[in-house]
Image (tube, rainbow, N blue to C red; front, top):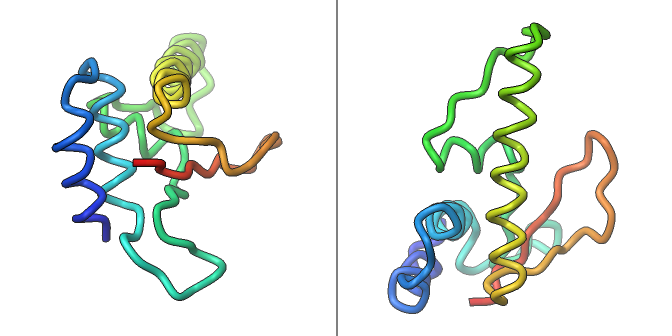
Length: 113
């Protein structure tokens, strides 16, 4: 896993606000430092927004909970993750590896540390 990437985040990106920093660190920890598999290249985060929200300490409602409160909570948390990842893109810490992910397709993030 990404111990070298996590070190780079710690050394070079500690000035980030808490939310983007937590997401970048989580991405770095779950990305591969090195890889010989062309299907899973090094420095790419594959796990998706639900995994990232856990890095922010957010708990999602159950997938089968469609109450208005649950729908609102999921929407709010997803928007928070999107806001923080957009900050990371703007600052050059990550790039989008998938141009236009459709519904059910995860965005893949390339760490550009």
